Length: 199
Image (tube, rainbow, N blue to C red; front, side):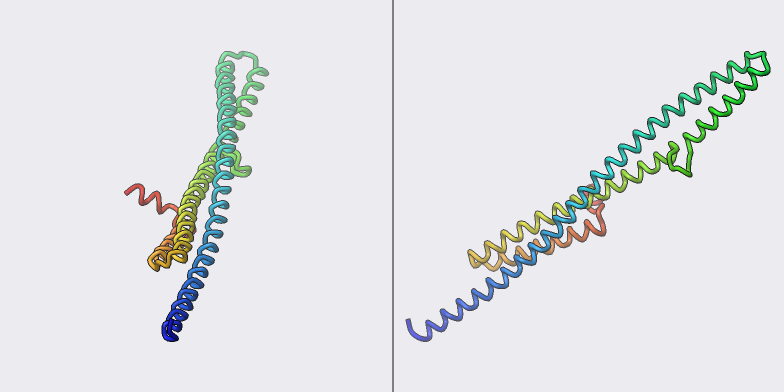
């Protein structure tokens, strides 16, 4: 091997080494993005589960209050029937007072803004928890797709080092950008997949 060929071989090896360093840096950056998307995904998943439990608890409380309210309203209606048949003034006064108490309790069970525990407030809070759960679930799906893109990008970048095929590194870079876009959609436009699915 002549000196000229030897120099060309050294330059080629140096170029390959520099290229490999760039791809190794790309892999490190993609791994960082992967860690972030995994962390965001886990957080969104936890939020989704938490809001689902909260909504279930609120709906259970709503049902219990609704049943109790119906029982009290029934008692008040029966009291009114009994009141119509009563002849004793003392009995009428006691029944009237009890019916009034029942009706006030039933009204409080329907709406109790100060505690947020009337059936109207409970239904509103349960729907808000369900909406928050749905947003968190949508975010989680975006982060899952982003993580998959980052993982495949790492595999392609690693393969490009072994094979020397530059197009694998380029594909890896494109997938990294796709993963970043999915992460951004998860953060700022979590309903995107639903919008695309509906059209």
